[in-house]
Amino acid sequence: MNISFKDKVALVTGGASGIGFAAAKAFAEAGASVALADINESAALKASKELESLGYKVLAIKCDVTNEMEVKAMVEKTVAVYGRLDVAYNNAGMHVPVAETADALSEDFDKAIAINLKGIWSCMKYELQQMRKQGSGAIVNCSSQSGLVGTANLGAYTAAKHGVVGLTKASALEYVSRGIRINCICPGTTETPMVANAVADRPEHMDAIISAIPQGRMGKAEEIASAVLWLCSEGAGFMIGQAVTPDGGYTIK
Image (cartoon, rainbow, N blue to C red; front, side, top):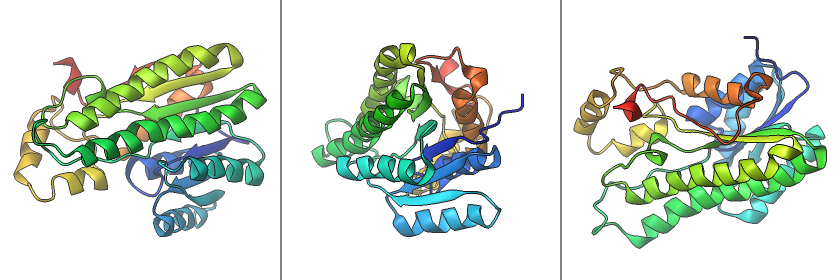
């Protein structure tokens, strides 16, 4: 299948590294003009320059998804520069410290919900306002395999990612009749800086993580990005409110 986003505009949050950068690059390779947003402005600029050096059209935007006004400005800047918004991948997220529920800190729970769930809600709110005007668009939200199954000692993260799946389904029903498709992706453990940082102080956990994956390896960011692009493409035109799960078989056990 030849997936093309020629003359389309794509917005990717958390786009400076990991799955977000892989998705931004894949959209650009497929012909899209890309708005690459990240809370780390210098990282966003570095990532955008890397893609620009390859001949792609990329706009770097600094955005903290917990700040609704920054999210609003992110979408407005994308539209001001490119004229429209066709697809969005709401990827920005964070991990949380591993802890039993009885020992977890309330501030960690609040931060996980603020970034991983409310941040996606805020992005969707302003993306949908623009897409509603256009009468078309596609959105993919980033959940996790932890949005489908329980993950012990990651209660706040699991709760937020389950919330993303529910938010995706509810919103998909609201906008399907208006030409806007909304789905989510639930990646398994993937080779990203976030995963590396999460196990940096407990390297022995990596063997346990990999042994729990039936395929025997972590996913690659490019593999997740390819699924995102398909969900945003015309080839996935009958996909509404679905949770697509590239996880090496983890959730089917």
